[in-house]
Image 1: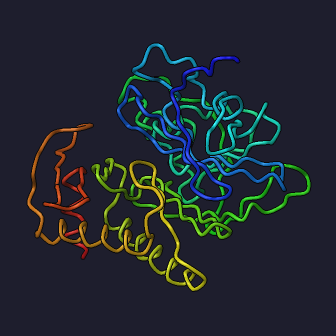
Image 2: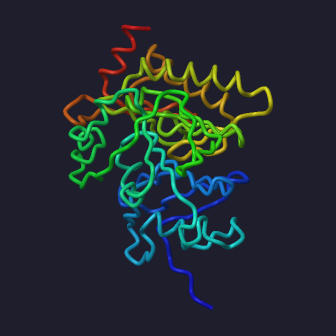
Image 3: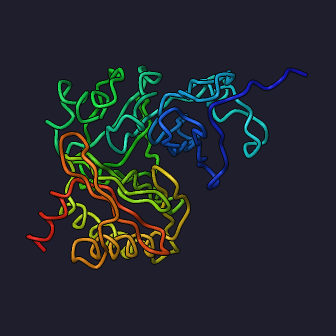
Length: 305
């Protein structure tokens, strides 16, 4: 029997069609969530974010390519088979936003359709991605890719000429970044929110973010979930830490925490300077949320709300 190679990734089944792939020991300590939805009826694999490119602290790891993992690594929750054996199905990649820990493996899918938000086309222009991805800040190579920018409420289709629906809808949810998107899988009743929010690690706003716009996006998502939850509870999955949590409660509780910050009920727990701006940290006592962002964003929200 051939020995299974060691991998920078693990995978567990979330739903009938979708797996959560994690980078467990990446050098950036981001531990990103990557979601892989198998749609054999459309000969398509939907990959939501691509993580940190398999750059592991474990020097003995043999599989560092996300695509190689998907195509060759036996997954226990998939009856011991790879998710896409031999790359037999085509890929569609959706990037929830352009931060490095979500795009560093995107070049591995250079032959595939790569989707991103059309909300702010200039934000994703070729000349600005090195800065907006934070690759410049970290001094790392910026992946080269040309995403297809799609509108709000866009339905993702298979990449073949038949164009069958994958049952997944793109929602513009700016705030964390101008290009942030969420994806809603109506078949599995799963909402993927990228870095809009998550539990048990600081929600981080870069200098390009906006708490005011984030709150509007949360209001939209709350309304969206309420409108679509008639047939059963929708579960929320984030770009870090959080997976398969009740969407409505998670959205509402995260909003309460951010409003507590803006309205002065949460004290500042730490200060530093990051990317040339005074940056503040808040931690919910005994709770599951925390926040790191430029202080300017909190002051802007105080003035507006």
